Image (cartoon, rainbow, N blue to C red):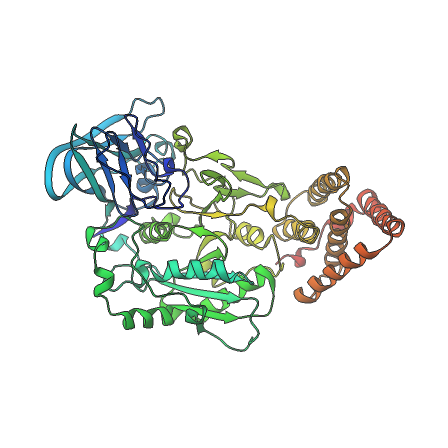
Length: 566
């Protein structure tokens, strides 16, 4: 049985740095024209034209796919999946050559296979690829890519590129993804993402992925909290168009979408894209509601995995296709692991903010953070699984875990931390599975500081961090000192408020209503801002003195009884 596991990502417009997708040599720039048309004058020597569905090389130009989006990690696919063999398939026309190459750390890349020719009609070139070893040490040495070169005075058109895996039918499992999006008054971003999902092949008649994705949008700004499962068409998800973002066979680059019955497709969308109005229970409450609805629908849809995704991310549909293919082929020893989607920055679109996260007691380490993934040298070891959990911007869990576990109702922040660490293991990461998202440094506020301080302490308590008291004091001290240094008194006050509420929870075990607590915190912040400067200073000094007393004399109270753990 053979399935597509990776398709070439054509950059299109607004994609960011082209070196995430392909590299050009022989002096070509490969840049999009300033008019945004997506086309370059290919009668100019040394030119590369790209669009969302093809590359056109002219006059001796050479293009390679040794990039974050399009390299093929043979070591990864051999280690994590039960595939017996692989092949690379490219549809070409024109005159030139195509080569299969292996990336080497010292830059001396090897040619593994090659085909030259002149083709007036689209021609399919295929290279057979043997699986590598299953040892982790193979991960860095088995990175493959394709190279295309146009003959002098001729053009070469690359229409589609795919990597396929062959596996025994008993090693290919049925997969259905329940995509949960929690939203709160981000209608513009939500509509954009729903349109993109509606145009995907998960809703295309005749595609192997059709019907294998259902979307559950939990609307925390919803007023009708008793209504379940409204379809998302009321959000104007848009008429579904064709998805050209994956470089599939040429049938998908033509009129396949036009031939499909629009009414039948819309019916599939109504069945598989649902909206659930919800009170404002925060991000954690929204994802919790989505998991509860997924549990109810598990048998009807045949759900095998839950994918959590923020409402304001930007994503490529190919990320979902690669995730789906990976889950179908995972070896039994990896089938229970979570899968993590990387976060890329929106202000520097080729820079990875994190591949996955390591908790470190609350001093979070962003694995692979700050790496420019357009730089070739940063691709070696790109798919090492070294983090502890994935953020809910893109995190996938097997249904057997979700069936028995729900997130702790933090309201905001740290719900993904505690849920992922409770799961255990190492989340799987794969190049091409990522989102672009605004980073936390753009979202800082006194209100967020409250949740960070309180929820960090609760998460450490629930997961059994030891030594607990030392860990909490270390993180608290660092954050309080940072606020004092910049004289951010509002932030300092909310941090101390968060510490106080953690101590109350630790002693009583009682958890407040999330909405009421959120209103209480906002009211306290507004009251603080309205106080005269002297009174505000007096209150903050009093809170600092109480913290110092807790810091010096109250450590033993940080050790919670075992019954307090979730």
